[in-house]
Amino acid sequence: MFRRGCDVIAGLPPHPNIIRHISHGTHQKRDYMLLEYVEGANLRQLLIRKDPLIEDKLSDFILEIAEALAHLHANDWMHLDLKPENLVVSRSGVLKLCDFDTTLPIPATPIKLPKKSGTPLYMPPEVFNGWGVDQRADIYSFGVTVYELVTQSKPFEGDRPEEMLRNQLDARYHIVRPRDLNPGVPILLDSLLMKCLAYLPERRYAFMAHVLRDLYKALGVR
Image 1 (tube, rainbow, N blue to C red):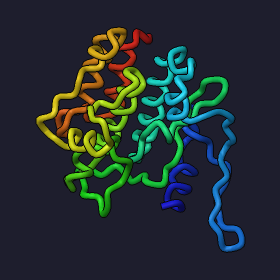
Image 2: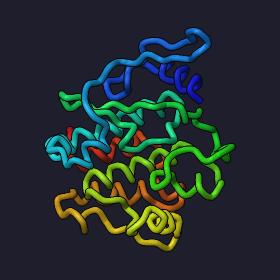
Image 3: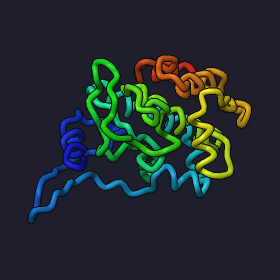
Image 4: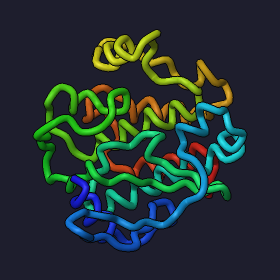
């Protein structure tokens, strides 16, 4: 997985919101990868300490996550582990997607994964259930991540992770709309996130480029 991640990031065209690859290889029989140094914190750390950067640059962060994923998908790869821990924010406030070890080629039709890939509470139902998986898995993870950014909570209620996971995997569970938790969430963004979080992949956006298109409208970006 590590070597595949190295090869993926090395082959990607540069993008301001994807961690920059410098080199990788083997030294004294040990694999290594050299990436750009980003002084800052990951998005999870910022959320835990309620860093004012979250509020100040919220729209920028949402767009930068989407831009990074759209770039990855445009180059025929799906990340399969999008979460706040894998989004690093520099001191200047620039967000970068990292950790490509779980990345796989986007298939022509959904494929069953040989093993579960990703992090519970960010993994879509099709991964847990052993259904076919494609780039819409990343779109679901994007929805969970941005929902958490705008509401400061997960889409799935529960006092413990196990309870939250049960709700996540219950097709009858109704996610609380982001605007019900944060009235400041734009109506179009609220609808966009609910579509990204659809239980069945065919009810989500098909492509990250379409998410990005609607994000510009939702956030009033021209």
